[in-house]
Length: 77
Image (cartoon, rainbow, N blue to C red; front, side, top):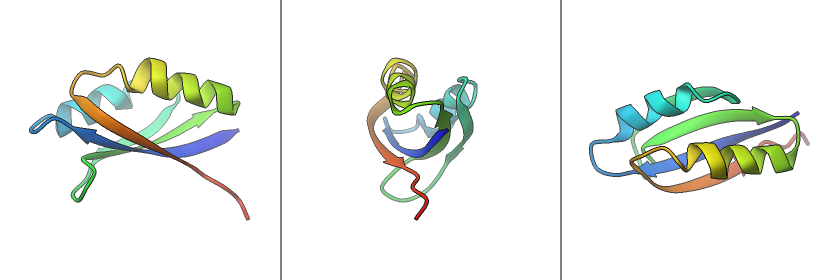
């Protein structure tokens, strides 16, 4: 299982609606609005890195109001 945090910037005033929309996507374990340079942080899970990429590109980045994403893959050292 591959896990990652997706840091998301949104259009002004869209953080809450983006977090709500993302929370409903299969593979998203958690999505919350936050303060700071990013507006929403989501924790996601997928079986492979390729599936993770498809989740981010085809589903998460397709949510209206998102301007930029940064994917941080979880590693276990």
